[in-house]
Picture 1 (cartoon, rainbow, N blue to C red):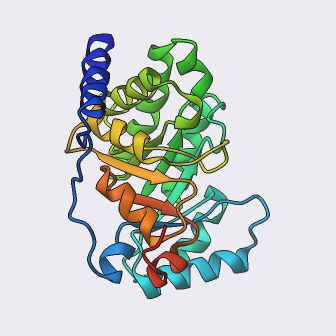
Picture 2 (picture 1 turned 90 degrees about the vertical axis):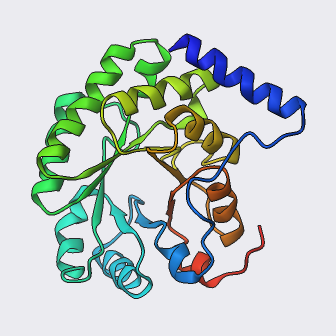
Length: 252
C-alpha cells in the first residue's frame, strides 16, 4: 500500500511540475439536463428534515430522473412508497455522519435499510481508526456492510471523509474500500469542515482505477462545479441543490 501511494503521489507531483493534467474523466461530460440529473443522488440528510420535505424530494427525483434519493434510514420506507414504480432507487446512509458506531451497529443499520427497500448504502468509515493506522479494523468495518449489501444485491458507497485525511490516508481508504468489494468511494458527508475538492476526486480516481465508482459530495451547488468534478474523475454526485443544478447556469 505504501509503495503504491509513493508511486501515485510522485506521478501527481511530476505532472504538476510539468503543468500537465494528472486527472481524467471516466464518463463523458454530460451534455444535457437529463444526463446531468442521471449523475446526481438527490440528497436530504439534515437533522431537522420532516416527512413532507422527503415527499418533495421524491417528487423532484421522479420529475428530473435523478440517480437516486439519499436519505437517513428512518425515511427509507416513506421514499420507497413515494417512488414506487418510478425506477428511482433509494440510498440510505449508514454510520452517518461520524462513522464511529461499531461494525455490528452499522451492519444492523444496513440490514434494516435494505429490508425496508433501500438499494444503495452510503457508509461512513471509522475515520479515527484509519488515522490511527488500524487498517485491518477499517477493512472489517467496510467488508461487514458490503457482505450484507451483497445479499440484497445493493450498491455500497464508502464515505472516506477526505477533509480529515492526509493524501496517503485517502489512498489507503480507497484501497481498503476497493479490496472490501465496495462499488464507490465517496469524498464527504457534507458535515465536515469542507466537502469535495477536484484534487481529492482526482486522487481517489487514480487510487481506485477506472472501473470503480467515485462519488463527489459536499458543497456541490452549481452545474459548473458538478462538471469540474466529472472532469476530475467523478461518476456520481451527491447534492441537495440538485434542482438548482439541473436548472441553473454553468457558472462556478
